[in-house]
Amino acid sequence: MADDKNQGLELLKLHFGKSKDGRWEIAAMTGIPLKASEDTDEAFFAIRDDLVVAQPALAGTIRFVLGQSIVPIVTHVQGDAVLRCLGTGFFVSCTGLLITAAHVITDPIERQYGGVKELDELTWHARDLHIGVMIPLNPMFQGDGYIFRSIEWATFLSERADHPLPIAGVNLKLKSDIAICKVAPIAQDIPHQPLTIVQPGMAGTGMAVGKTATAVGYGQMRDIELTRQSDGVISGDFSFALHASTGVILDRFPDNFTEPRVPTPGPCFSAQLRLPGGMSGSPIFDDEGIYVHGVVSKGWVDESGVANFGYGSMLAHSLHLPIKPLGGRSLLELHKSEEHGFPKLSGPGT
Image 1 (cartoon, one colour):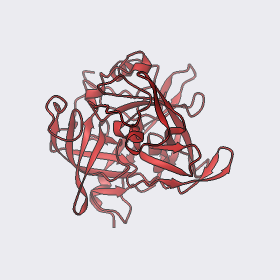
Image 2: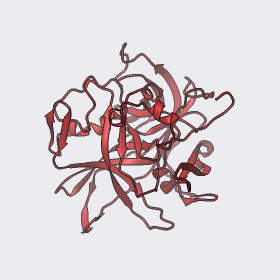
Image 3: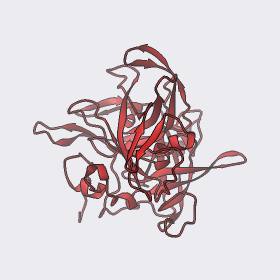
């Protein structure tokens, strides 16, 4: 049976739309309870797919509502009958800016597939590779299924210049296990649904040692056998199940790039989080369940299997990263503007 200790977990979720004057705006806001299924345990559990209704503009299941913001990252090689499942990502703007772990995006380096080729120092070409995200349909109105939206570009902290895609055999020497990506629109004037990332000046318990962190992602994903039904329609066992992993923050390593102490590149923290395959790139929420402070980087496996221990990259340290495809502006600079539709929460003194 699900443990009662899980019943108190809740995330604050904003739902966005577009106003008559063309601005992104919050259309609804609600708390999303993270309740465990009966066959999972206290530390890592599949999230029960209850109904969510928030007036005036939001109705759907938890799988749909959270799945608009937290998405599986997949890749497909032209001609293959397999969809490769790489990890998890999450939207941070209405225009489709998405964050994941850098090693999720660089998966073709490790498994060497898709015909990714370096044309010159600044240009990469993926001959047969399509990489993107799976966004669920609303089962209440659209039926079961997903739509695929491609990742248009990705950038990350490395010794080399930023590139849209990696290439097999190149050592990127990552300074952080965080990638910033741009996902193609769903449709005109239809926003992607962003999570609220850590914001300068906000007071709270945050990610202090001893506080609770919660990661939400698609744990235990497996590659999927595909069958083509018709043009643009492909079937398969798309059993993307959202999982939550919760545990205490153990230590912080803000100087890990200049003074490496742990295997995750760049500023990071350790926590009692069970992080099986598929959780890489998942958002890590703070003790209050409001802000995303971290990105799942690495779980730990011992002789008994996946342990209640893992690392997350600190998101705050990437807020100042220049994003080359966006004119060198950082997430912090974009957050201050209104063009991309970043969630903003204000409080006393902000």
